[in-house]
View 1 (spheres, protein in one colour):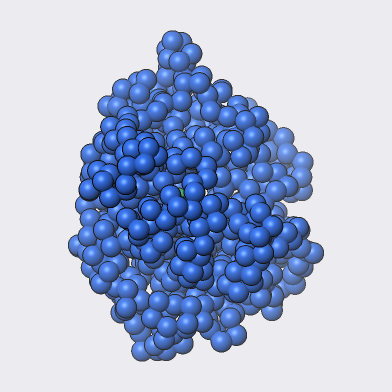
View 2: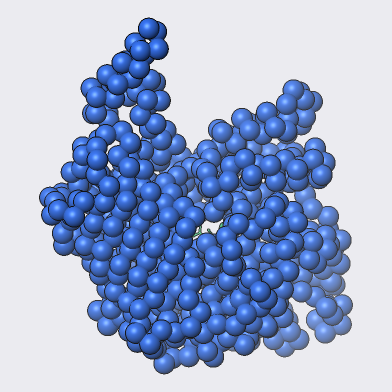
Length: 627
Ligand code: BES
Ligand code: ZN
């Protein structure tokens, strides 16, 4: 009897409360509302009430018109029986919509700043398929269309996407939140002669028809949707890893990434099996706005890590590590971004340690620590943006893209490791990835898990960690760990010699890696004299460095000291490199003086067209002072 009543009650709740604004605890349970998705303030979709099970994408890429057009068909389960499906769009033109094969009405809301326009489509309890025919707009923030002369080989145009954090909606109508997962198939038509690749099972040869088919059977969030189109070729590294690049770049790239296969094995030894099948990397043209992007099965990366000496491949270790932290266990909202990036930085350095030893990974830790100190200084010691748990409500989620989630996040994990011991911590992390595989997690859920699975009732440990200060407090907590300085102490000694007028060529710099050079230069006094820079340049040829990290830092120092000898090379660098991490500090340094500002404006106006829309946006603010 009791059973029947509660069943009746359940049915009653299901039938009566369709209106998804009123939610009681029972209602949520009965309806399986995804409460994690409800917390995400950067999606306008109602995917908390509707399962977005699968996407069938059928698109054509028009390189001349710079437009993607086609259809997105969503297979859904209207588990809460709501009367509409709401999706995210950004500058999309919606041509028509059909629901289970029948033409349907739709409504597109006026755009909201950062978020775009909500697309409303009426559905009922039984709706299975919602097909949207659409085109991308000129303001598609995810897309960078390159003309042939903006590529490495300069023969064919190129397109790549960058969907993280909320830009997938500018090329696919979708429920665009990190907590919303779906599998996908895609059919992509590109001009013949070009190759298309996605974050999915790829084809490895060009197709004569220009039609490519993709399959991603594992559910992923929209920010991991990715597409690259261009004159691309492939080389294997080993049986499960390989590299894609333009033909003129492929051999260099293949050489640089020699150890990527080994990296995957090291990562597996640490935290369990790689669950995505193949791991390939594509080296993109230099306009790519970031260093790397962990698109599943196919990391996208900048060519600025092809240094010729394998010294910057820790970036690949980072993107690979996201195959666990991020792609397998995903931050629920962008406020929880440190769960993606802090874990990944930690994991990256563990892979590097395994490959190159702890004196090497200590250098990465120390440079990261220095970044953290600088970043806290510039954000303000008391700023809420220096908490691990962010509050990005009403803001661009890119505002959270600082060193805090990366460095404060990874140092927090390092602190736990030091306190509980490495073996125990590794077992904990491995289990964490297993227990949350293909799921989403909030900061709060992680802290609860940490408590039950690792800390338990250890009050001494609790006091030592001071979790509250790390996660919900500003600045750098007093117990922040610091890496060993074995190799950097030597660098410090050589820098001191230089500052005491020892000629640069007499310094002991043999076998220095990129990281030693970075530490050497970064910690010079604020403004060196032109003569000092000149001496260093004569000895080490920094102005012509083929290493993008060193070159960028050197140009910043050159601007600061008005060392004009380096300016022509700096201009060449700025004309092609689109990586925001390099552009912002360099233009930022120029903007500090009136003369520098003039130079920044001139250079930016000349080369803005080579930068990705997202880089343009932040540099428009910085250089052109656009609001
Ligand atoms: N997932 C990030 C890139 C990202 C984050 C893009 C947020 C847009 C929004 C990627 O894994 C990353 O962190 N890239 C770094 C490299 C890394 C070695 C720190 C980058 O691009 O500099
Ligand atoms: Zn990352």
